[in-house]
Image (cartoon, rainbow, N blue to C red; front, side):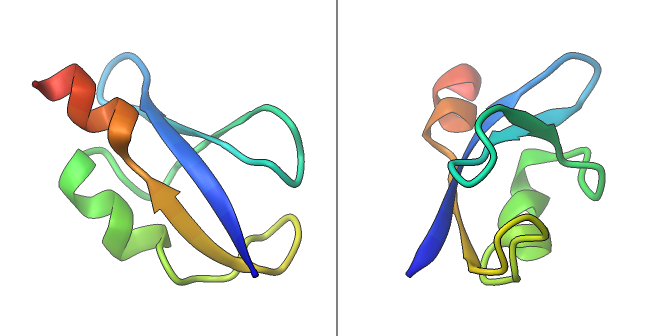
Length: 65
């Protein structure tokens, strides 16, 4: 089982993830570019629930398109 984070862009090169284990958006402090999100978070343990993180970047790719 994974913890599926839905990532969205913020302002000034920030990114936020909606986390299902703790409803709401959490700041992704390790990245400032979209291409680094998967490397920094995907497959790592969620600090909230301990499951493996699965990053969904469809909102980020939509905003860039």
